[in-house]
Length: 408
Figure 1 (tube, helix red, strand yellow):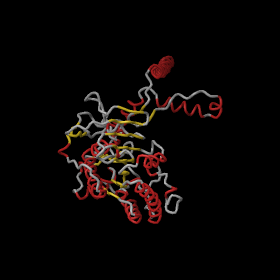
Figure 2: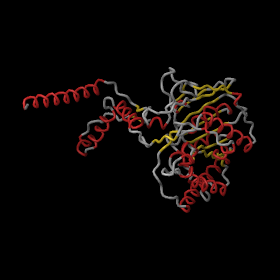
Figure 3: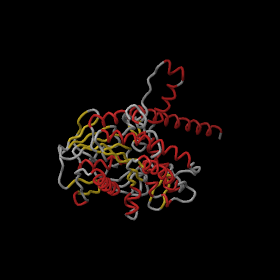
Figure 4: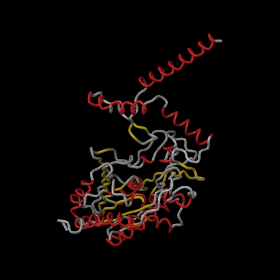
C-alpha cells in the first residue's frame, strides 16, 4: 500500500510538473496579442530589465502583470467561469452585470443620497466653464450647443430592482446641471426629454451595451439637426430616414455588457449601420494623416464578432471629414464614445466635420481649433452620468475666458 501511495504521489507530481512545463511552453511559443478585446484594453508588455526597477520591486510587479495577461488559455478560462456563473450557479450578478428580462444592465451597489448643495456647486462650476466656451465660440462667429443624453442605465432606470442603485436615472445631477446652464444662457438639448416625447421607445437603446442603439442614435441625430436649424438659422440639410439605407449586420454584437461577460452573453443582438441613398464623397484625416474614407469599421466575415467600435473605428482623439461642399456649414463635435455613432451620420450634413475626444487629445487643442478654424457650430455630447464630471471631455481649458478674465 505504501509503495502504491508513493507511486501515485510521484505520478501526480509528474503530471503537475508536466502541466506547468506545457503551459510555460505555450506562453513562449504562442504569438503575443496586444489587445484584450473583451476587456477593451492593451495587454501588459514585457518589462525592461533595469537594475533600479529590480531593486525597488517594480520590475517584478510589471512582470507578474505581463505573465497574468499572457497566461495560456486565459480568455477561455474566464469564459468557462462566466458560463458556469450564468447557467450552472445562476448568480444574479456576474462580473458586475445583471440580467433583467431582455436587458443586460450594470450592477451598482447602493449609494448614499446626493448632497443637493454639493450638486449645485459642481453644476455651477461646470456651467461657468461652458459659458466661457460658449462665449469663445460666439466670439469666433459660431454657435454652441450642449447635448445631454441618458445612457442605457439612465434610460432603463425604472427597470432596476429595489436592491440596486439606479440613481433615478441620474435625475438629480441633470436637474442641477440644467438649471445652472439656463442661468448662464448656455443652450442645452436634453435628449432624454426628446425620447420621452416619443413614448420612450425601448429599441432606442441596446440590450447588451451602455450606448444607444443605432436607431436611438438616428433619433438623436434628427433632434440635433432640428435644434441646430432652429437655433442657428444656417442652411443645414434636413435628412430623414428615407434618405438613408439601413443595414443590420448578421455578425454577433458584443456590447459593453457582453464584454464584461467575456462574449458569453445570453442575449443575442445585431448592430445596424446606415448610409446615404445618394452617396457623398469625402476624405478623412486622423492625427497622423489621411486615412481611408470610411465611417464604419466593417468586419471581413459574417461570423466574426463586432463591437461598438464599428462606428468611426472607436474612440479617436481627432478626426476630420471633408465633403467639399463649401456652401454648407462646418461643425466641430467633441465628447465621449456616444459621439461615434452620431458622427457616421452628421458628416452628411456639413462641409467639414471635426470630431475630438479629449480623453485622448489635449483640451488646449480644442480651444486652438475653435480659434483657428472658426467652425460655424460647436457641439458637445455627454451622457447624464458625467455632466458634472470635470475630467475627460469635461476638462475645458477656458480659464482665461471665464467672466472677469483677461480676454473678457
